[in-house]
Length: 142
Image 1 (cartoon, one colour):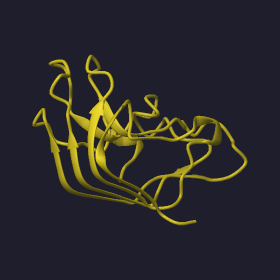
Image 2 (cartoon, one colour):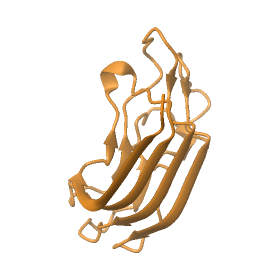
Image 3 (cartoon, rainbow, N blue to C red):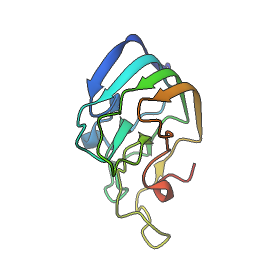
Image 4 (cartoon, rainbow, N blue to C red):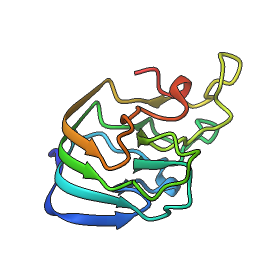
């Protein structure tokens, strides 16, 4: 399968730029490239904003191995997140899709193959906050 490239030169107003379907295990194996966008997170009252939304806790057997792109490249992205509340931690690449996964005792029964490499170039935020991998760093361990 070819790489997936979102090449915009436009604005994107939504909860996430990419939202992977939960009913298929949020699986996506090709490389993901996001470039030349302005991302305006939809809910300015939220304390979080994420570029990639997915839902797979690793507790359900979909009958196949579920993947996230081995490589994600994000270039020339402006995140307009200045209207978020004081408890806003800054934007994340991945939504916290498994809030239960916080330590070694909470492991996936059905392994999800995570992203191995994230390349970020020329990404700015209106809030001045740095882009994080996720608010739940344990679940990804990139």
